[in-house]
Image 1 (cartoon, one colour):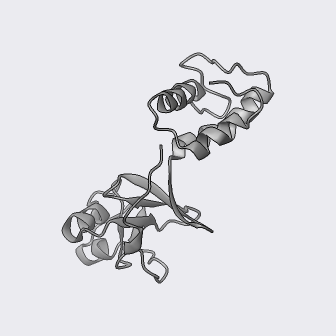
Image 2 (tube, one colour):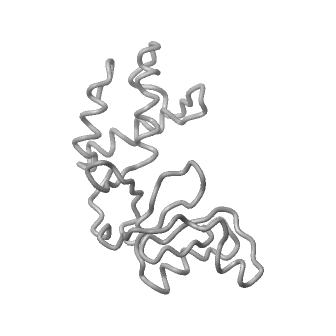
Amino acid sequence: MSSTCTHIDAVGQLAPPREVCETCIAIGGEWVNLRQCLTCAVTLCCDSSPNQHMSGHNRATAHPVMRSAMPDQDWSWCFVDQAMLRETPGGWETFDPFLEAGTSMVGEYLAAGGSPDPAPDFVNEHGFPLGDWFAFVREARANGELEPRDAARLEAIPGWRW
C-alpha cells in the first residue's frame, strides 16, 4: 500500500503558501483549490481547476512533490511515485487515504456486531464503502502489497479476521 518516496530530499523549508494561484492571477484565470510546490514554494491551482497549473508546473520543472495549500488539509503528493505523503515526527511517509479511512471505521463497525465478511456493496452509516474496503485490504495482503504496519494495525482490532 505504501512505499518509500525517494523524492523527499527535494522538499525544502518554505514560506506559507499564498492564497491565490500565482499564474491564474497573471492570466485572469480562476481556481478551485490551491497547491504549493515543495521545491520552489510557488502556489498554483489543482487539477480540478480549469488550468491545472500545478500539474503543468511539475511537467515543466520536474519538481516532484507538492502539498495542499488549503486550510485544514495536511497532505502532500509525489508526482513521480504517484503517492500521498505526510510528515511525521520520524520523517516523511507514504500512506493510502482509502486504507486509513476504512481502518478508522472498521473497529467501530466490528464492535457494533458487524460481520468481518460484509457484502461487497456494503456502505456504512457514514457513506463509506466498507464492503469494497474489506476486499481492497484483503487483496492487497494476498498480493504482498500491504505494509506490515498496516497489517499490524488491522490485526490489533478486536474481531478482525483476514
